[in-house]
Image (cartoon, rainbow, N blue to C red; front, side):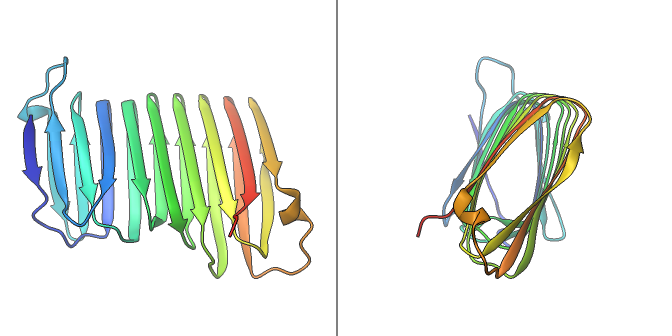
Length: 212
């Protein structure tokens, strides 16, 4: 096992690149990276941690990483998955989320996400997003480009949120279910937009009202 502290604790942007192996997040007040070697070979050439301005960049190939992060809202999260497992759990969430998946499995969840923009490009593998939105102003948006693989969305929205679904299925199949309580509302304080562009693959979406 290799252990490396995150010495630069003041960062608001995160980029993770994974090509095999696994990355798991644990929110805490003590930022730390713990890198493990399992049955596959993992040495110091198979992972890299770098900082550019206020961004932390983590790249791994075949290693298993436990990433402890402070509980706060991040400006951006950028993930690129070519294979392996990515399981990221946040409390405060992020303002911008960019996801590119060519294979493997990625699961990202946030329990108190505010106004944000999510963009995904999925060419294969499995992507699961579980996002609980707190009260926010104006618009939040999720843009999906799916060419293959499976995408599962579990979205919970506060009351007085207008839901707009846009886009087309040129291939593949999408199944979108919206809580009737959201559809029956007469007054709105904010908007949630889901844009989809499918050439292949499967999209399964559940949009529910957040229980207070």
